[in-house]
Structure formats: C-alpha cells, structure tokens
Length: 376
Image (tube, rainbow, N blue to C red; front, top):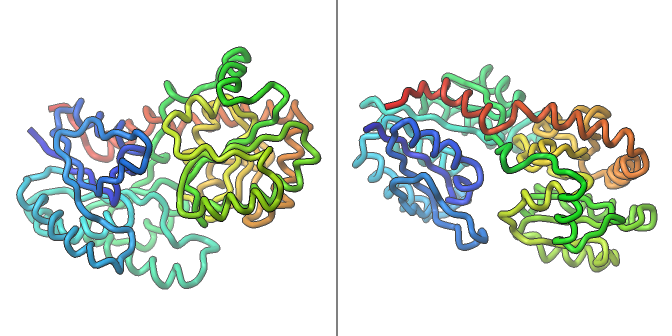
C-alpha cells in the first residue's frame, strides 16, 4: 500500500483546509499520515479525520523558536522510518522543516510537494518582506519536486524565479454541499437562531483576530455606518491575539449594539447564508476561503485590495474592492450595496457563478492530475 504524509505547522490547518484531500488519498488506496503540532483544543471542536496515523510534532511558527530543532529531529525520524511515496507540506515552518528533513527520502524516490498558501512577498509588499522571504522560498524550492500555488500572482512569480516544477490550483476548495444559497424561509430561521431579524442588515467578517486580518478597518467603517444603516449588525467569526484590542475599539466607538464577536466557529454554514454581505479586510491574503464560502452562498462581497481578493472579486461585478486601511471608502461601498438592492442581487448572482472553479470537486480534479494519482 502506498503512503502519503501531510505536514503543517498546526493540526488545525489540516482540519480546516485539507480533509477532503486526505479523504481523496484514502479513496485511492493510500495510507494517510499527518504530522503537525496538536492545537485542536484551541479550535472548538475540529477533528482530524481520514488519517491512519498522526504524529504530534512540536512545530512553532517563529523560526527563532528553539523548539523547532526538536520538531525537525522528530519529523526526520518519522520520514526516515516510513517509506513514503509522497510528502505534501504546508505553511512556512512546516514547509521549511519538512523539505530539510526529507532530503534523504527524496534520494530514494519520495516525491516532496510544497503547497504555498500565499507567499509573504507580493506586489506592494514592504521591501523587507522581499529581502527576507523571497530568498528563503527560492532556496527551499530547490529542495522539493514541486511548488503548488493557490493564486495567479504567486504562480507567475514562482514560475519565473524558482528552479522546480511550479503548478497552480484554484485554492484549497470549498464544499458545495456545505455552502450554498438558501431560500427566504431558511434564511429567516438561521437569522432567528443568531438573534437577528429581517430588519437587520447583517455583515459577516471571518478570520483569525490578528493584525493581518485587519478587522479594525470594518469596525471604523461601522462607526460611520451606524447612523446611516438602520439595524446594522456586524458579526466577526474567529479568535486570536488581537481580540482584546478589537473589543476595546468596539467599546470606545460605542458599537457594542452593532458588533458581535462570535469566537471561533465550526458551523459557518449556518451563519454565511443568513447574512446580507461578506466583508474581508486582510492586508495579505493567499486567496480567501471566507470569500469563496460567501460567493457560493450567493453573497455580494466588499474586500480590500490584495492578490487573493483581486482574483476572486471583480470590482463592480460581484462586489467592490477598496484600499487597505481606507475605512471611509469601505463604509461608502457598504452603503451603496445597502441602498441599491437591485445591483446587490446582480453582484450576488455573479459571485455564485465565479465561485464554481473554487469548489472541492474542481480542486480535487486538479490535484488528482498534479499528484498523478491512480487508484490502488
């Protein structure tokens, strides 16, 4: 039986993004192994399915953390003691340490593939990002058989500069059986469960509460909109290190009646269809799973201009793109959508159509071809 090893810095990354592909490998007759630090207790009910063997490796996100030395040694032992046919590594530290640890295995026939979920260098990124991260990614690309990117900008850059096989896929896929449009009655029932009414105009912003996700921009936009949009409600789904600062800002701007922090949720399929608008404020985004989920549910989107959002949102076609940090512009675009229902409905339909290439089934076909999978 062939074996595949999936690696990421933390187990939640695998649970959130890769379970359909572990299932795909198992259905093809592969024995599936996962190596990652177990952080699932922090993530409110995520579980690691479709896994025959799990290795709890103490990866740390910071490259300066000395615990990564232990993580490397443990991972190398796992790789050397198992004859893997394929190793798929993800996330910066998981990707770097795996490619170092798998050098010997590659010499004996193991294929090593790195999935880049968004390079830290990109058009418009600070110069220090290019000076720091670009040389690292270029160097480590030589230590794998393939780099897979999830957006076109990263693909073009990697294809031009990296000395390895480079491929592109349409994100990591969203399940259409989980995210889809609902009828008016179902939407009303979902809103009731969230203590929302038909009179509320509801915005959802999903993502870890951190500086990169930039939720402050939407909060400041809400401060402008609270007196312009009757029944304005904004839901933030996620947890993270910036939660205390965000709560303080919400309180300081007297927005506690308008904004609710839902915490980390594993039932977003019960929330996304209930809202009126999806907003994403990220400074940097590889693609934006939350945006695709909303698009599949036939939602209009307002998002900041970055490579991932620009690939998904066509300005004035399925939503609006706004400048990072410009909360006045964001407020203005949200206001337009609120008052122009006809255009909002057209945007929503366009969103659903554009999202079809980003589904799990579509990406499975891409990866089946890339991994050259044949049923055992």
